[in-house]
Length: 225
Image (cartoon, rainbow, N blue to C red; front, top):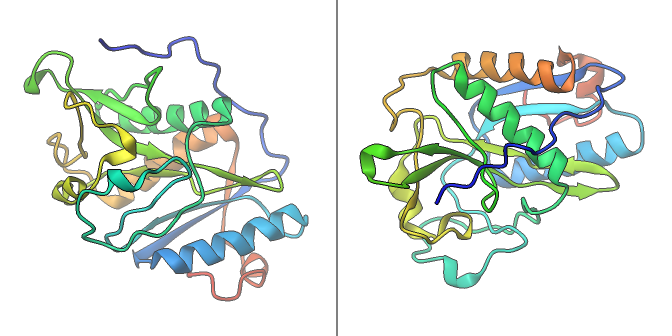
């Protein structure tokens, strides 16, 4: 049975100043990104840095959220750091992140949907059978001093066989799998995705600004855009 959260409230108060928008080329090590996120979140909480959206890719790895269970690791193919985040709390914020991805996917004629009992963005797969669905975007957030860290993982053209090593997001029902834009037959470039994400982000959260040198000084090792 498919149960959608059609009545969920989405949308947040617009930021008082433009949100910084960064795009990193190549793969960014998870530990590097985590350290930079922690530093940036602390600077935001101290009022000396602006909010930031950072689009990046990691080398292959699994992450363990706050509700992860060791039994959900079937085969430890990759490093398994603890992410210290999850998608079960702060429902309106999580729902708005889901809406952001749903709207971005619509730019490529992909119908993403939210579910009442499963966090993330899902697509129906009638080609696989009745009531079959695949997850195309995972969401996990952590809140520290009322600043959120982590965010969204959108599958564009990844190796889906990696998911066989874990129970993705704790969802073991055989009706539900994992997909990507490429798996759905959509050849989309990263710049196209980046543009759609930025456009839909601004409609939901407010305007964004490109990175500036002044902001770079807050985290000197932050990757250049």
